[in-house]
Length: 321
Image (cartoon, rainbow, N blue to C red; front, side):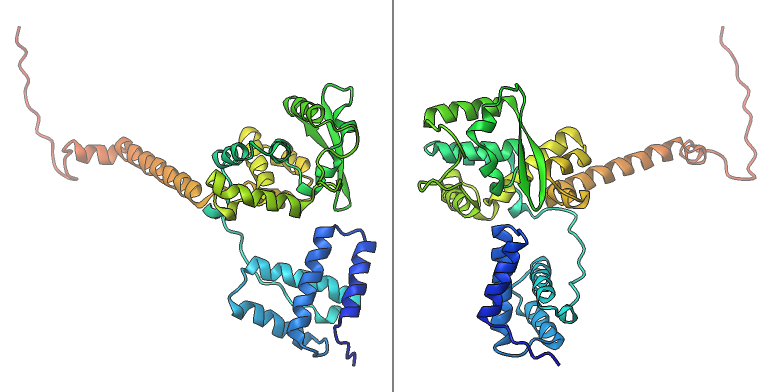
């Protein structure tokens, strides 16, 4: 029987394996973090299916995690077990049903985005990044593909090729945004290479951007739960879908392999869904009422029609001349 016990050496080797397989830095960080949490729970116990089941039960009973978070952590462990050749330790994910709406405190509105944009007035780089994310729907990790050379292309309609999760796609740059980027490059005197860099010259990454956004919360009057980089990508998705109702095209723009993923991005808030359902029910009840008024039998009763078997009295009519 395999009595493998997780240790720091194994997780270090696992990290190298993930990098060799070209996983993104964010994915590697998450997989290692989840593996470390599992190792901490194991406390030296050998890796077995029973240990994995106990860990899943702990995650559920702790009350600290949403079902989606638990499934995400179990998915991370499946990657670790595969690397170790221990697929026998995999446990089933929790069966969940997607909510029909997006939680109100997680949905960033266009008005809130405008407030963030205005709050960033004194930070030109941050403000420009906010415009790029909302105008193209890219991930923060894809900002590094926005270079001086790409923006200065001679073609009137500019597009940029980005690569993420082993897929590459063309990002359309609206003309107005390209002009703003060109003006930003000139003003900042950026001669070549990546446009959005840190003071050390490295491309801005997810953590850099998130820290800057968090500072805007109080100034903009926007809840912290709504202010995270991916929410601007979702705002782009909702605005595009409301304008076009083309979910397939949107999936292509976002780089999603499945339209099901894109559908999650365009979910409305509970308040919006409830308002739509209320409107629909009012319309149904109105139509039922109209149909009842057109029903001959009901109309007859309303007009005092005779009962079955009752003879109608004929009255003579005298015309006055």
